Length: 294
Image (tube, rainbow, N blue to C red; front, side):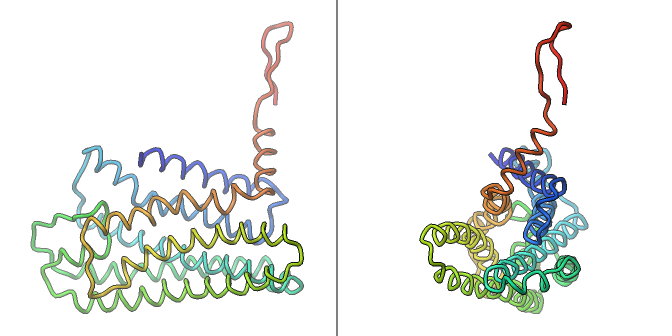
């Protein structure tokens, strides 16, 4: 099941990246951010799922300490970058719906590139602190992680040294990243919904509500599970609950993102069909047998 979901996720996100790159009509900031999100999801999911599959298949149930720290760093790096990118995408939709006249100026190509670069650079810095602090803890044994990847809570529970300072520092960082990004996203959608309610057409309101509702559902699942895992310095859920929660933001939301954000979009669907027709072969039977041409 996890292998099937992983392959579907890779296919969906690769399609988004390829179609947005090839269709000149999908050059708006929204599709540029969607392309960045899909590119990010390819790496984010590949940080965790391949090792999970190897673990489930009993091909390898051990990981070296340096490799564990590398996995932890990239997991935090990609996760934080996705938080920033989702907040930027919500801000982009807020400007497009609530300030359409100023939108081309505020979301110029240079501004979009700067926002995307800021998301990635901030994510790079966010991943450093937890990885460095966890790597300084003592692990005396048996060093068995009751999880399917090197995540922050199980690693801190596994340490035989005092992890209070590390726990507080990671809690503050988690609040700064997750809660602030989630609140910015939520505020953007509140303004969006208030603007939608002023649309005179019932059909227009229903269509826009459907799209924004789907976006907000995916964002809520992602932020809700991430916050429940990291923004709780003193509460410790059982390892089995931790693993179930982790499945949502490492397996489920990367699959939902391309479906909700792109594949349900009519412009994207039309562009996808054009790319598939352009790349496909049209075959027929001629005098010399079957003939295929582009």
